[in-house]
Every structure is written in C-alpha cells, then in structure tokens.
Image (cartoon, rainbow, N blue to C red; front, side, top):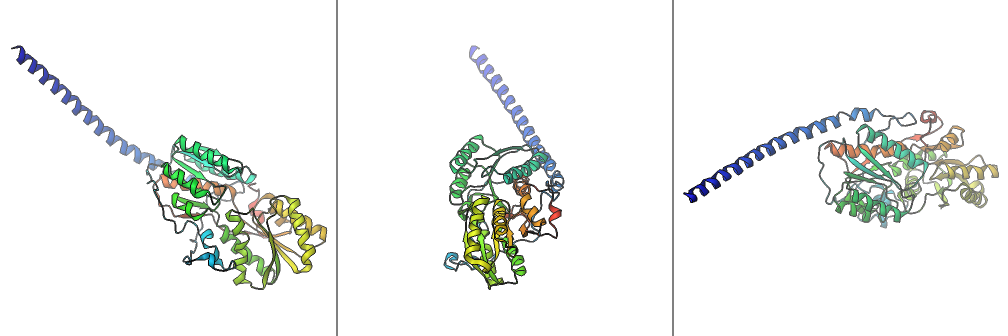
Length: 403
C-alpha cells in the first residue's frame, strides 16, 4: 500500500512537470510570435524616417544627403597597374577604385530590424574645423533615427586611434564607422573589427584596397573623379597649354595622390601640352606654402601659368601671398574646397575654381548608409558623394560655409 502511494505521488509530480513544460512552451511560442511583429514594427518605423532624413539641410543650405545620380564608370583593372606610366590614369586604379573589386570576408548579415535605438561609434582621424562639420552632419542623421551616437577623435595620432578601436570593440556597439589615419595600416584595423563580429563602414579617405574586404562598404567623396573634372575646367581656361605646379596634400593618404596625380594623369590625355614643372607637399601652413611658391616664381618665371592646391584655406592663402609679393596676377589657381576662405577667394576672383567637398554630407552619408544596412537595404561596395565644381558663377549658392 505504501509502495502504491509512492507511485501515485510520482505520477502526480510527473503530470505537474509536464503541465508546466507545456505551459512554458506555449509562453515561448507566444513570445516568439510577439518578437516577430515587434521586429517588423521597428523596421517599419525606421523606414518611415527616411524621407525626414533626406529632407535635412547642411549649414550651407544644400541637401545634407545627396548621392551621385550616375554610377561611376569603373574600368577593368589592368593586370599590373603599377607597371603603367604614372601619367596613365589606370596606373592609379588600385587607389582610385579601391573597394570596387573587394573580396568581402566574414561580413555580418543585416538584422533587418531598423536603425532606431542602434548604437554606433564614429571614429574620425583628427581635430579640425572640417571634422567638426563632418561630425555635426553625422549627428543630424543619427538624431532622426534616434540612434545612440558616440563620436571619437584621436587627433591625428595613429596609436591613439588604435586604442580607440579597442575601446569601441569592448563596448560592443551595433556598428563602427571609421576614417583610418593611415591607408597602409587600415587593413589591420578593419580586420580586427571584423574578427570581433562588429559591422564596419569605412568613410571619407580611401584606404589600402585590402581594408575594403572587411567592411560593409566605403562612403565619401570621389576625390579622383572631382579632380579629373577640376583639371579639365582648369585646362580649358589655360588654353590647354603651359607649365603648372602642384601644392600637394600630406604624403600617404589618398588625397595626396588624387589631388596631384589625378589631374596629371587626366591632362596627359585631355591637354598634353600642359606640363608639370614641380610638385611638393609643404604641409598646411600658409608661410611654408608661400615660401614654396615664391621659389617657383623665381625658378620658373613666366613659364609658370597655373597652380593646383590640395587645400583651399591655408595653402591657398600662402599661394596668393606669394603671388601678391611677386606682382603676379596671371597665374591661374585651382584647389580642393570648400572652406570659407576658399569660397571667399573664389568670390574675389582670385581662386578660379574649387571642388564642392561637403563636410557635413560626408559624415551624414556614412550614418545614413549604416541606417540603410540596419533597414535591410542593398548596399553598394562604394557610395560616393556628388561631384561639383564651384566657380564665381555659383559660389554664392554655397554660403554660409560649413566650415
């Protein structure tokens, strides 16, 4: 009798446990069913914000988010680009078109649950008025999507940027957006983020092509494309002939090549009678640029008819100070833009033409692309900002300056 009572007791307990398990299964099923509509609801809410983002304006009154209307024509990669002459545009294929032939590795799949509430860490290269404007544009987009936005700046110190990347990885954000300081070390940085399983977007400055394998995409200005356009405008005004010189960007980064070898290689075919007298990188101090240009004016005299500068602020001021001291008003100057100083010089008729280099739009495009990825949209391997050349005819449209 005692044994039977014991059996009955265990049967009752087993039935109770089974009932609890069944109830739990029902709750899990209900919870899973609830999660899917919640995910869809978040995605729908996020997608509904796209129009608001596209309506945002930068400080200069221009649309904050504008994509190139026509896709960039990407020629086939030569078997060995570096074997070609430096004045052949295809010599620069691996820099100009970095990202277009990337072999993507271990790229996380989009959760397709919307951008709202996502945490993104935005690591730039250094402190500068341009960077301030870039971060402001990124913040504007993040605010609309109600994303948690954390900007970080290593102030041009590669070791500090590497530490910031480690810190960002430890914080486990939903995405990291990065402007690498050094193109050559960018692959190691991108690989580390990728191996941590964190989605990555590189932006603004082109990197070594190997870094593109580890990021979702790259966004930023088509620097080569813009300088190819700018050089043609310059050549036409010069009558497609004469000696020119280049005040270069800091060596190593993509602007160093795009803003010097872009024009040189473009003019080799478009205006072969324009020839290069010299090219040097004096940095971004007006005094050093002035000394360099003064030396050119002494060495080359009237043979120097044009100067192309990588910067429309300090470098441009140095150029025009040297021209003023030499009493030269016949040298046609172009530059990358578009700072307040550069636009003022265009307005005064000193600088002939500059590129439209939207700082706010650069940061905004990177964050908008991140949102598009969270929203499950197809992302191209490269997303360019639009190209435009500013001259005296339309410079007023870009005031007030972004920086």
